[in-house]
Length: 489
Ligand code: GLN
Image (spheres, rainbow, N blue to C red):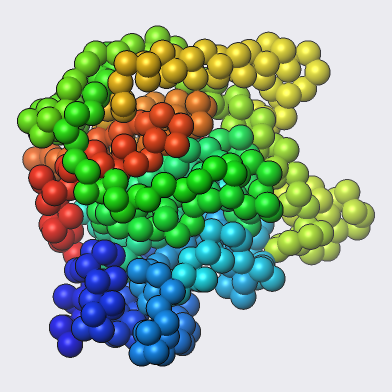
């Protein structure tokens, strides 16, 4: 048996292969992952809840293998979940004090599908409160750190998932992405993250932030690993009326296809002022590599992209103000003690339970939906959303994918953007349009800065265009092999 630290260095696909050959057992892999997690968590803080009983699931997986009854390539693979996924018997906080003590009675669909395919869940990962943020600083708990530089943020809101994958505590994780929350932390932590097409993965059993934008997706060290995870969780779910009843492609086949013959659109709007020069050169170098591998590159224009952040913060806060109305101290989690009336109990529970950013968004969202302002803000934002979608439709009449930076900067320092919400909101300037248009987006590591910080390139696809994104990401992974670099922990 290889030493435990070497097991943790395997990609998810490599581990799956070794489990299949029975060179490594799931118990060995799970114990290695738990040991590494215990050893480095005091530095990384990616976990909100570590499930020490995970070895039981690993033992069951090994028993299936021994009988030739493995359920999928993921059978026996240790995986982490952003703490936004409802998990039977495991605490689920969505990063908020208001859900403290909540232990759900069921698994959401994506989690149930992972378990049905034999994956071993090792725990729940840190996030910005209710997925609102880009740094993991919006939290009442200890924020996770960026494994490449512990003085910097891992990004957000799925920052704990990105940090845990980058630090090799898990072989893959699930996150959610409403405006960039899978792709931006993936870019900042040097891993791969996919936001699938809206409707590709069920949202049943995922704590809702903004229901018309939220989408579940995989995070892992390589594109190939993300393809394996998406294969397990994608597909129609009668329990989520927004999940699409469309066939699921063979994603692993797409991984091997290469970049040859694909036309890549480069939008002028994604390379303007505010873009860090080292991010720009990393992304341009990746484009040159893909061109050398046989892709064609073409300029495209997304003229309404500049309104994406503004439209998003109206639509997302409006939906959040409605979704978060359910946290009232009655149904789940925390209830403020000592109230003398029902009304006072609601007020005190929400005042104590929600953090400042969540309160800011509930107020903003309530305002843009209120009589007299609805037309001026909410309706207008929905119209802008349509224009943004049409920009993409126009561009996709000429190209197979759109390429640009994932984040305008590499990982920033703790505290750097905390005092100015607008600066924090701008961290998602290149990821938000995808959510507004419902499109898939993949972030793949493409470079490191002189300070040793990862840079991510983003591929945006047509609806249901995940296979094209996987072909491009995997071509880059094979070419650059950045996933073999380890953070200096
Ligand atoms: N950072 C963005 C926000 O704060 C996006 C978050 C997300 O995708 N969940 O809303």
